[in-house]
Length: 199
Image (cartoon, rainbow, N blue to C red; front, side):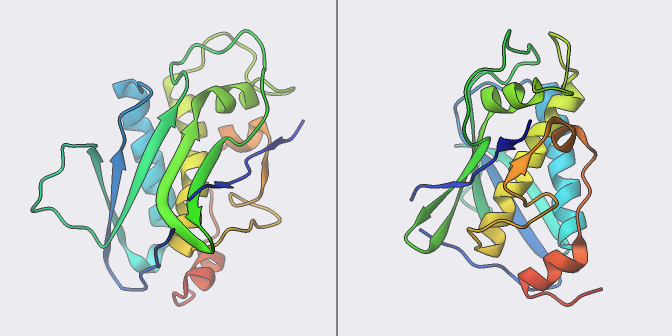
């Protein structure tokens, strides 16, 4: 069973840097609680995905909690990340609900640097046939699934694209195996989209 990861475009814009080195600030907005163990793995997987996708940009990710960054800090790009729902490792009793696993805010044709991840829907997607069969999911696997959704949405922000690819991380539909697979991206294709030179 395939589930939609439709990027719900809510509210306006950003542009992608094509420099040799760039700092990407990711600010975690207050909201759903994400355990320190899940968050650590999530941040590591997301950093790996961004760095492997945009290799020529040499992205350096800096993570901050909302309200904890200093006025003296600056980033080449900044994205605000919000988690929604139950982000614990306890799986729901049934795969309920349907809808996007994540979303990116927009205004008109402009893509805003605000993304969201729905933990309830991600865990429900993992319970689909051939998905995670147990009542508890290891922190690292939950973090990996959340990271896949975050990378998909980060891509929308950095590339300023609303549409999806036919395959890979940026396709519109994910299976449980897609969400649980190690991060594997296509740097040459993303570099082309980003306006960066191919390797």
